[in-house]
Image 1 (cartoon, rainbow, N blue to C red):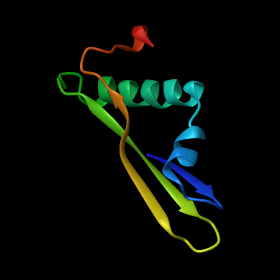
Image 2 (image 1 turned 120 degrees about the vertical axis):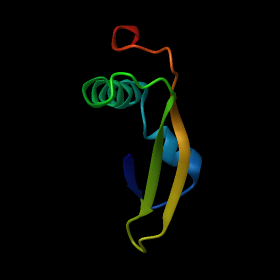
Image 3 (image 1 turned 180 degrees about the vertical axis):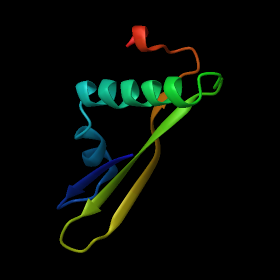
Length: 77
């Protein structure tokens, strides 16, 4: 899960904060965890993003912000 604190909570602004480099790191972390703890896993994974308005604590939850396909391997990132 990636959590972002922002003054504005528009979902597009939250997603813009997750750069392609950060997306690759999140996907690599998910694949590494899966390979270590559940190597037979044969389903896609999702990475959700939560944005928090730091002044009020208001939350926006973006489900499936990043999808990790079934056939993606660590070498394919």
